[in-house]
Image (tube, rainbow, N blue to C red):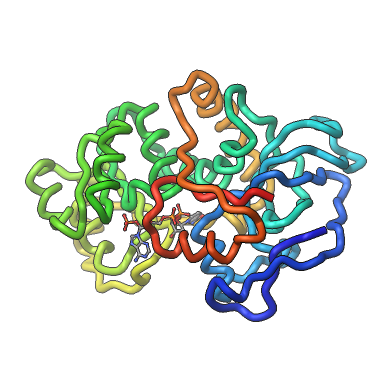
Length: 324
Ligand SMILES: NC(=O)c1ccc[n+]([C@@H]2O[C@H](COP(=O)([O-])OP(=O)(O)OC[C@H]3O[C@@H](n4cnc5c(N)ncnc54)[C@H](OP(=O)(O)O)[C@@H]3O)[C@@H](O)[C@H]2O)c1
């Protein structure tokens, strides 16, 4: 089969499409003939050699796919050959065929295309795991999501709307600001023009209930200072660095929780619990149009280098997809 590989980590042009051996499935897995694979920022970090695949995960990039089941393991009961599915996978998505655990594979919600379905797993699993399971989000809370137009940001905004949250977000351009406003975010700050910290302080004297952040760096102290008593800071990435001088007195006095997580290394049973929740609460909202898949652009597998160059520029709004 054809798949994207690289010999040594580095810039986008280390990637090339080559011939690979067909992947073998375990008894509790299915083999998917991949039609689309979603791109995610962690793919860049892996390509750069800073986020190697965990043991037993495919070395091929790609954390989410959609396509058709073409083989099932001996213990698989929920799928048959020909089923149209999407899946959160243990790497291997940038390829013509990809193995997937039965428990992280799902039938595509009604009214969602194969192309759209490939954009669901990584961001919706991550956001659900962090905002709902870890953050224990309640209705009508005030929540700050940094990077509102990223895959993660748009998934978070749409889940927060289900919980009637008051949403605050940061973006890097006015085009992104208008987009976030158009999907119902009440408070959007272009961080290149205003200091989100000062602006939120003016509006919300009491502070924010939950901050979901993947930027880090100088946002860390701003996030902590924006939280109200019993607030939670949830870190899922550190694009601007993970080191900060923190005055823990504030954490103690405001009874804050500072936490975070990565999805990829979590056990299969945990990912299965997330999928159960998504099927019950989020997928019906895809079907009735309340939640949408926002696709910025689609690249052919052979143009994978351009797709990563584009992802790295960060101008996109929503998800970037590879057509396999
Ligand atoms: N922990 C987990 O389990 C997990 C899982 C998935 C993703 N993540 C993390 O979540 C983050 C978002 O992933 P994604 O795939 O949704 O991203 P994405 O679609 O590529 O969007 C990233 C956006 O972040 C903004 N940004 C802010 N500061 C930045 C900086 N210093 N460098 C580059 N971009 C910056 C940019 O928009 P602006 O123009 O608005 O700045 C950019 O478009 C990544 O850090 C990723 O590693 C974590």
